[in-house]
Image (cartoon, rainbow, N blue to C red; front, side, top):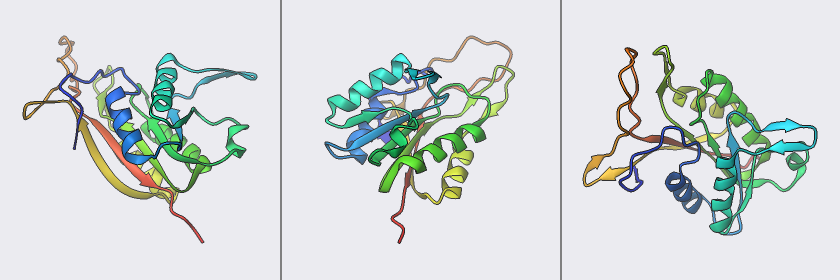
Amino acid sequence: MWALGSEPLDPADRWPDRALVHTITEFSAPGARVMLLGWPAPVTRGALRIVEPDTAAALSTIGELGRHGLDTPTDRTLHEEPVDLVVASLLADHLDPIAAAEHITALATEVLAMGGLLVVFSRCRHSDSGVLFDPAGPVVAAAQAADLLYLQHIIAAPISGQTVTATPAPAPSGNTRHTVAHTDVFVFLQPAHG
């Protein structure tokens, strides 16, 4: 378990700073190439790419930690030097956890160096109609189907004393809602083949 301070998590934050910093310092060395993969992917208009402000802030954090930050690969970056660490976020609302997991796993395996790591942030959530979306199973299945080795599942949560600090419950709407208490952090290894 990673203790992330005492402030509750922001359910809308795709790149929670405390979890991102912990991931970068735990799983990469200074000078490492670190790529962020968000879902949905950045919008592209010809050669112009629109990077979301939260992704730009996360890339800045990576730079402040002495790593080289990259965002979602393009045709140009697919042929550059492999990356040491891919951090993927499935924390944004998504309707299809299977498609999201397959998308980030496929991109990660194309850019990861042998011995590189894929770290995925995810959490359960309910849709507006009350359906529970849990990307954990699809993430593990997609990574294993891509021959990545499943190393660990970390619970990252804010702690106050000895209690997990959950987000405040939303106003009752008549639908079942999930209270966000932690972020799941999955770690996979791109094994060296040969």
